[in-house]
Image (cartoon, rainbow, N blue to C red; front, side, top):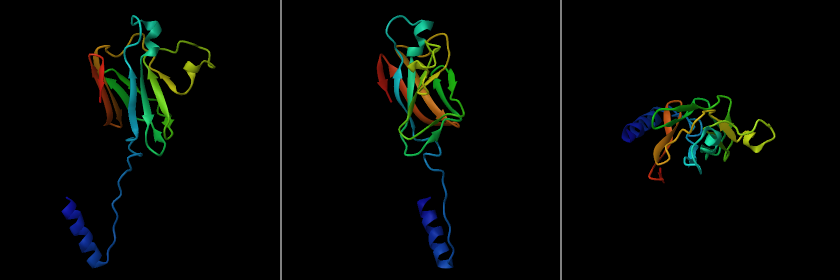
Length: 154
């Protein structure tokens, strides 16, 4: 393929033609998004009242803002969280996707800041000893974290 592109470029140069190849940047494709942490085994017995402690931390590692429109998190059994379409992450910014509901209705409480998104499930989502979570945007897999016997593996 590289040889074909070089040959086409040489022919174009001889004929005095110019061309350019345009591809979407990694930032435009959401490739800067990465799972940087998973809290899958919270202290104590798994209950609806502590499901909010279970969370996936997603960070924008690129130099540009990235839209979360069309992005999802999915566990090994197919449970899927869809990010709000209007949410973007600036360069270096992160967000926690918490499994449960916010433990406080007070909007001034730190649990209700924009850094926290809630799935509002009434039970824990991820397996304590083995599971995985996959980050996809517009059908492209960007990142996956899996664990087995309490050891996280990329």
